[in-house]
Amino acid sequence: MPENPAQEAVDIFHAAFNARTEERMTDLLLQAFTPDVLFWGPLGRTEGLLSVEGFMNSLRGHPRGPGRIVRTTAVDAPGEWARYGWAYRDASGATVLEGTDMVHLRDVRIDQMVVFSGPLPRQGG
Image 1 (cartoon, rainbow, N blue to C red):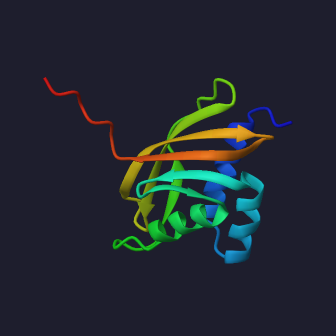
Image 2 (tube, helix red, strand yellow):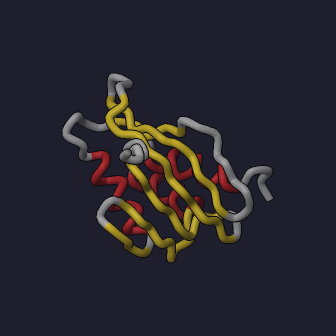
């Protein structure tokens, strides 16, 4: 078992996002996620690897052009749940989007993923 299975799964997911070929992306997604992954994204809840792939492809189609996703924080993993910060950067390296993801692991692969983009809203007062 990997020393930090959550970090390994997250890093494999990011490698899939940044893969240059569809074949490599699919191979990495199969390593990072369970086939029945529950994906909670900006547009709601979906299920299966195709939902993760659809989210990735929508982000890849960003108006500022193709870019890369990078992990911007350590993976905080107190047990089977983990959270980490990420950024989507365009070809020039400028941050286009950033956020926090939460993932749940089952047998060292992600079986649930919740994507939050943007900073947390400040409490009004």
